[in-house]
Image (tube, rainbow, N blue to C red; front, side, top):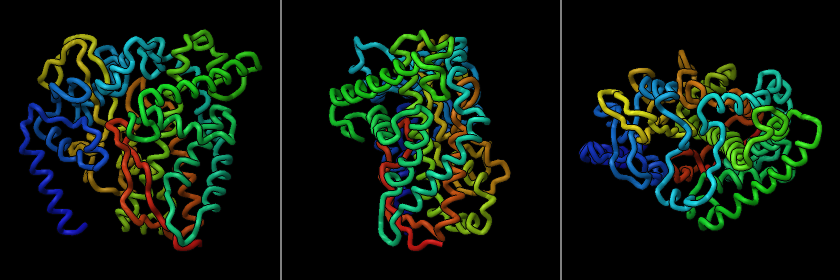
Length: 423
């Protein structure tokens, strides 16, 4: 980093620390797109780990920024409910949904319904099924990598991260394989507001998401009338807890599984290439000892934190961290901040691939809503890096990434790289 950029970072940090604490607002997509949100959470962890923002584009909300406090909220579903959504929604987006049916997924439910619906799809990511999927993922990863250009700049996000996750997701859904990039497109359509990602207007966003649901309604109708199979749609169509669910619930679960199976893994694959380039000593360490891949994968998942927050709604007045959170208040668990908590993680801002406890992170959440596909995400990352180290001496990042304009999905739109040579 040049002296000039260091000075600018110090200046930006000083500006954040000079703002009135009571109105500090970390929920700004522009900050995430510029990778400029870090001083906000540094200050909140130090001065107000349970903090209330009275006004924002998302309405008023509480920020929980320390690791142990986030874990306490995440594991207390009696007081902090998921029923009203797990991502903070902008007031503009809420205005678009007035009078429209809510599409609730199992991650946006409390027990017992949550447990029953989650159980219906869990076998798809059980260890026995992952063992069967591993050689398929490895073969596909190899083909993707063997098809990459050598000696010319290309977008890693498009050619590798999106492609591998789309292939895996198509397999999980038993979705037409040749149309797999529709899943990527629909995920981007669902997670981005108009003006960012593929959505040009709210009307187009609604229309394209309806096309997605129509496709998945067709898959449901096929699977419900056929013998049970081992894909996510068939599992939901035949499981007692989900086979008679409301169509809007089905659409909610499709949304959850598309976004959960796509965004998190693809952004961590991209994040790993970016992080190792930012920390060449760690890249050297990995090349010298490929057995560090599983540890590197966990460290990247912490360092990247592919979902920046999860939201809860208080079901009652509750004393927490010396503050009174009132019934109906929105509570933001900032995973991206908890993963940098100095009191729990040593040198949290450093990227260290051989940490003593690399799995000490909160990127997958805690409690009943812990990410159902966490082992599949780790498996894909591990395999792609095993195959990359076999093929390429180095993958060089040649420019800064374009980051996602979102306070929820913390990721990369593009990442320019060049592969100088093969092994």
